[in-house]
Image (cartoon, rainbow over the protein chains, first blue to last red):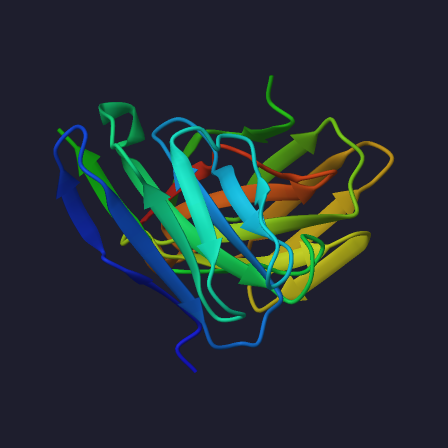
Length: 113
Length: 106
């Protein structure tokens, strides 16, 4: 099992460009999450999907959109990237809800110039 | 406001030392997690606990629900334990601490 995979690992964008971060899990988990990690701050939840077909905003959703394409895949889209979105992005999954252990992807390091 | 506070922020230890990292939280929780983030960036779950104590190898995690406090202990520390250790709690949402950066010197 690959666990949670993310692509790309690194990305540099110019302000205003758009891109989609891809995430997939092969553990048959119901719930998936997108976090961002910034220096000096804990992981912050951007969006989550409790189950296939549902998505909800987290703590910092502005500037992002998500799609739960199927049970395996959960993508994060930046429609018009801003320098404030420079961060490391982590996707995670869990069996159901947040009570269960979360499994994290390797992260995507995004720089917006 | 920080729902989860960790201490210390940074910790340097000599190989073999006993290490303690503390986590205090201010919200009602259903579970507390200890995560390890390797220098390369990957995050792995070490423990999930809602009461008492858990042990895995040289790692021990304890939680006191009444005091809203948890500790992560590493016995006989080794340079490969060098990483950032993150405390996270399940409240009405997931809250993360800012992490404790541990360096173990040979």
